[in-house]
Length: 265
Image (cartoon, rainbow, N blue to C red; front, side, top):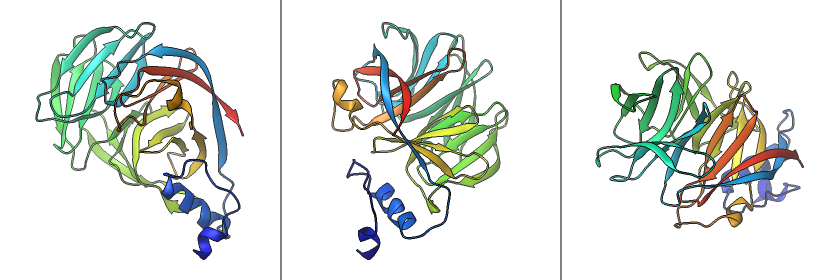
């Protein structure tokens, strides 16, 4: 209680107990550069399939690629951004719970949650061309131009050589000096790893070398601007259009996808 009482400010989302706790420790004297805080501005709103339990999101060559979860409902899809129409889709076997996806060259990698399987597809045809074993749970996946980056629900990010899906190193993610678990969907943007913190309205921006969270984006209120399809309809889904410098976010069972820009608090 003493640690909690020393906090001079609160984050607005009470269910983010973990993040509030970490801020409390920092406010009690932990010496570190301040974590920068951002909010957001909505630029455009696009349709999104409210039935999609979004696990992975990528924007590439003018299209969205989305991986979804749930046993019997997991899929990989290529989607037209403007109208949400599905141009190509592939269903996973019902025994697999799909998770994060990433594109490396002409390949799409798709994680599974607890089955330890990683599926590899041809980007243009969705034909499966291979698979890999993943020793951990699969949550989110990103690519920094050289290595894949995998989250497993803990505070650890694992870096892997794509061709063999072989681990090369790990980094412990910390927020004000404390481990930050529940890292979910990932995106690599301009030298940082961006991660949804599961069951919160926050996306954190992580230094990939040190694992330190440098900034936090508070998306409180965004879910109020769309229809929600279930009690599991939480923020999850980050896609970056590198060519036009556009940022897209959505959530599980959200009826819309949002193009946003950041604003400092």
